[in-house]
Image (tube, rainbow, N blue to C red):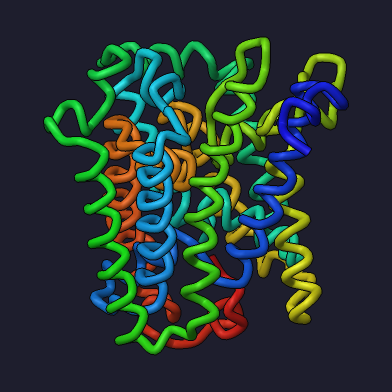
Length: 366
């Protein structure tokens, strides 16, 4: 059954949502099994102990670049109309939003995708944090925080098209981008071998990146098969989390699209992985102080993600895979803020000193 037949049978919106569920479920399962998390990778990097967590993140990122650029070179994908490239962007929003998201990510002990994955494994801390992040993101998108977001966004803007395409800026082609991805895939493999990362883990980590590329490919294919304009996009979590929350609260105001299916899909895939491997376990907050830390971090991530136009996955992997300049700025600022925040807040904690904690011992921390 081809896409046109599916669209004729259920409609464009539901077809996109079903695709979002499928891509999200595969992403969620792969992320749960690989323990994919930018926060964990950044801490390992800044503590000078580059090993499994960096290898996992790098494998996912490089795989997303390789497959996305390969699809483009094969003529199967055109991302020129993607929001991250075609629309006017904000350099100030990318930088400040990235810094806020990176700081919040350390405070909540998990990036947006990791919080969703952990929620499906029974982590109530992650569930509450994700809800606060979604509410904040919705407020920054359509609510009380819109004036602040628009003010910061307007400080330094950049035109769309070539002005936001890092390959155009650097005078490079998609072949160069593919080679870049292959080199970093090789580096990720070397780190994986040196740190004795199980083959099953680096395989599922590559599945995380592969699903980002499939997300781009699927939404582009729908846009070509549909008679009405359809947005070309891939996996991201800040905006979709806000949209999913509003869809639950008021379905009359929402429309079916890829993002609406993505979040529940990731939850389903993560839950399946946790149940299949007997890793589902209810966990809560230890005390009020830790709860306040998580809530503040969630607010920073929600507003920062909307300000930057993407989260650690939306900008850092999906946007990075198509070489959107603002996405790379966001990713760099997330890494920078993560290192500074970890140094200021967590360097003297038992976990930072290498002493196992209940979270780190379970392997379920972000």
